[in-house]
Length: 159
Image (cartoon, rainbow, N blue to C red):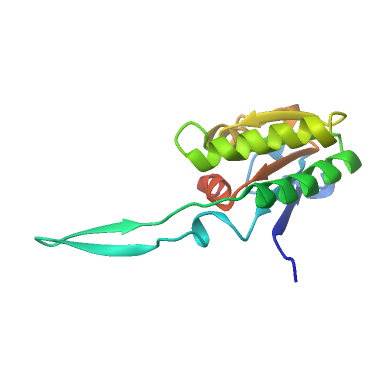
């Protein structure tokens, strides 16, 4: 089936801006797309286990795994969509604390340079992206497109 991309649009039509539970200035003109990778990462990585450490203590282990091809194919979806929008992509990853985030960043930057130099690329941490979406939204979020792993996308649900 080759289902690996989750497209999450968020648009606020002018007639509905006052009906939002958020302030009008936060949603007015909102037009963004989040492209989330679905088949790799922490949801499917191994090992995945809970270990009994004794003395009533337990440890949970989840593993985030990405291969280059998984990052490239989701990147292509994002860059192609960006060409139909405002020609901008923000790649959100956790490269500051995760090796999978380092690979994500390296692969997206290389793909951008090799196949999509006409599309503007910026990078952001999930927390910074969430803050932009949740309250410190500026005009830069209007008509934007963000690409992320499932782990990064979960950060935004805190808004």
